[in-house]
Structure formats: structure tokens, C-alpha cells
Image (tube, rainbow, N blue to C red; front, side, top):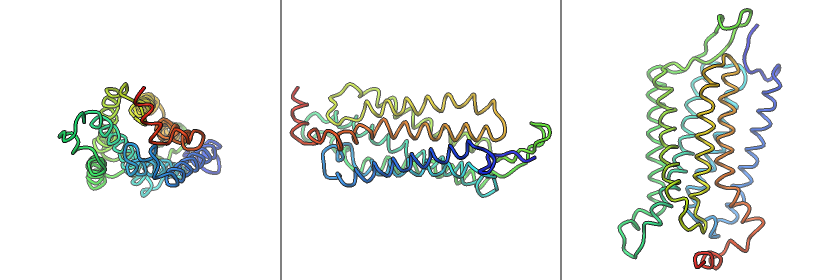
Length: 278
């Protein structure tokens, strides 16, 4: 008997698929609203280009879940971990870029300050591109040297043949995860440092919460990942992908959506000036 996350035999696959589609719809709804209100203060705050990159990478992270479902083959084994690593790295890099923007913005205390040159779309885009390129390089080396492949485990459960993905190079796999964790830790520390600064559209507090959720989910996933076998390993990783992506989406963008749809009176320059004067 073959054992894997099957669309035909496992009800959990249907639940995962429906949940993933729901999150994708929510993400697209947020993207549509931010595009429609793209010229308003709440969308412009902290670089709207990076916000759209972040939302797109979150959407792709949700979609890559489908690579983990169904019978594993060599091509899906190669794609699912590498694409997941790259999409998540773009997500975390975008969060880091937003955090650095907030941190530097409040360092600009007078006109002509050298910090002022570091604030802007080019600096944020450079952070996203550079950090993401490192992850792409790690994945390319990993796939070139020892890529993941399909294997049959006949020993873990008597009477069952587990069809699973062997990650190939263990060093490559954990380098990909470790680099992503390093970026998340740096982003969390920077956001924590600036969380108490004036908060007129300051995302530092929301970034702190999003990185706290992200790190908590993946730290909690480690013992579950190491103690399970077969399709349950895949289910644990899929849960971590969905939970951490949804955490970042909710913590960073739900308050923006609330202002855009329910409190449009706060989405003005006048309200920012009034809030800053308090």
C-alpha cells in the first residue's frame, strides 16, 4: 500500500486546498484594494512598491502549497522546497526592507542628514533584491550539487510503502532554511527596536508581531517535523507555510484594509498631522 498525501484518499488534502484557496482570495482582495487606493497616505507609507512585492510573494507562498500535495515525483520534489525557500525569502526580505525604512526614517532628524539618502524606494528595492539573490544562489547550488528526489521508504511502517521526497543535500536544505531564519531574526530585532516610535502609519509594531508569529510557527514546527514520518511530515510543513504566511498577511495588512474600507477619514494627511501633534 502506497502512502502519501492523496487527493483521493485524504480529507485533509481537501481542507488544505480549500484553506489555501481562501487565503489566496483574501490576498488578491487586499492587492486589489491597495491598487485602487494606491495614491492615498496609508498605501504610500513605507514604500508601496515593497508592499506589492510582499503581497505577491505571500500569494506565491500560498500557491506553492499545492506542490506539496499529491504523489511526489522528482520534479515536484525539486521545485517545492526551492520555490518555497525563494518565495519566503522574498517575503521576509520585503519585511526587512520595510523595517529598515522605518528605522532609518526616524533617524532623519534634520534636513540634509546623511540618513536621508538611505530612505527611499531604491534603497528598499536594493535590500529586497540583494537578500533574495543570496537565497536564489543557495538554491541553485543546492539543486546543481545534490537536488531532492523521489524515494520509497519501506521500513518506517510495516505493510506501507511511503512515497516521499529525499532532500538530497542536507547542507543545502538547512542552509536555505537557516538563511531565511537569519533574515527573519534581523527583521524582528530591528522592528522591536523601533516599535515605540510615533505610529502614524508606522508599521514597526505590526512587523514585530508578524515576525513573532513567523518565528514562533517555525520554531514550533521543528520538533513536530523531526518526530513524524511519511505524509505527516509534509502536512506539518504545509501547516507551517500557511500559518506563517497568513500571520504576516494579517499582521501587516489587515490594519491597512481596516482604514481603507472602514475608517477612510484616517487616510488623509490632515489626520497624520493631527496624530503627530498629540
